[in-house]
Length: 193
Image 1 (cartoon, rainbow, N blue to C red):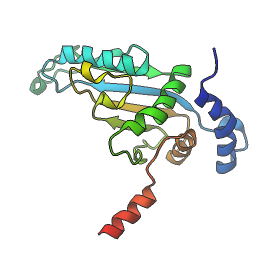
Image 2: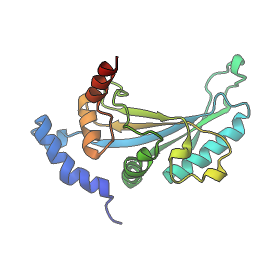
Image 3: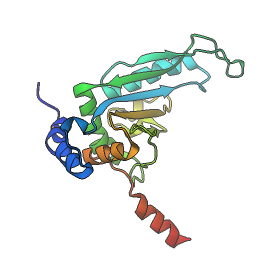
Image 4: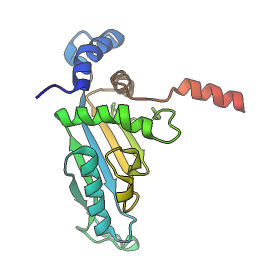
């Protein structure tokens, strides 16, 4: 089996670039992408069990891997939710599937977003991991528009080995993540006001 394109790019271009840019002395210090987690929650849907089945099918199409169903841990009377009821779906991508998904996300899915000007770069968690959410699944090319039963939102979490947000941001930017340039946005907002 051949090495994914983005993984080869990481080893050949990103590692030397980050080593030089961030001043690492050891190649094992360079942050790496550990896993990608795709989650969806159907908590507000009135027909929650059917909605979870739809979410499982959609995530399986998008990622190429069958997700696991998540269940509620508490009973919440206001939401008509009982303990152990299906609530959402989650899949963790590692290895070749992770690199292939990231490649498709950067080169096909992200530019497919309406009025796309880049992805915000502020959603880091303090430890170099990045999360981004999408309101519907139509941006993914694997989804057939005439087969959609309901709108399903997704969260995609990019888990890295970076110690800080700046290192994680540099890693994802070098991999090709289309971040919005915040300095340009601030300058245009200041000029408009």
